[in-house]
Image (cartoon, rainbow, N blue to C red):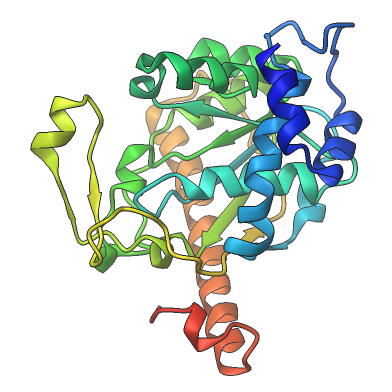
Length: 287
C-alpha cells in the first residue's frame, strides 16, 4: 500500500515505462520471489531520475557492452564520500539500456540495521552483501553491481581521488563459480561532487557507520557536478572458483587494470569537455 501511494505522487513516465519492461517474474501483486516490488521500483527510480538527468547530468558511454539478458556483474570504482555512484549506475542500467535491466547491489551490513532503509532496499532489489545472496541472484540470471573497494572506496579523501584502494577477491571467485561475465566501469565525477577532506570517526562509531565525510563546505551534501559512466567490454575468465589465491589475485588485477584504464579515459574526456565548454566551468572543480 505504501508503495502504491508514493508511486502516485512521484511517478516519472519514462521510469514507469522502463520498469514495465524489466524482465522480472512479478506476480499479480507486483512482487517477485525476492520481494522486489514494482511500485517501489517506480517510486525509487522516479526520485533518482531528476538527480540523474539534471542535478548530476549523467552521461553514459559504452552501455552497449552490457549484455541484454543473463547473469552479469558490473564492477567499478567507488568514490565520493556518499554512494552517489551506486545510485547513478543503477539508474543508468534502467534508463539507458534496451531492454532495461534492474541492477542489484550488495548493501553494506550497517545500512540494514536501519528499519525503514532496510525495508526499502529489499523492495528495490538491494540486499545485504552476503555471498549466498549474490550467488542466488546470479544463478537467477540477474545483473549484479559490485564495488570491490567496498566502503574503503567511498571513504577516500579528495587528495587520493581516483586512486583505487585494495580490491576484495570475493567477486572474482563468485564470477568464476557462476560463469558470470564481468563488465568493468568507471564512474567519473563522484570525487568532485563530494570532495572529502576528513572523517568524523568518533561520531561515526556512535551511530554505527564506517565514517562521516566532511567536505570543505562542512555539510556532506554532493554538489551538482556533471558525472559520467564509462562501461568497458565484458571480461570472462577460465576457472570454477576453486583456483589458488595467486590465480584469483591475478584475475582481479586484470579487472582493476581495466577499471584504471577507463578512469584515465573518463578523466581525459572530462578535461577535453571542460576545455571545449561541454562542461561549464561553473559546474566543475579541478580534476
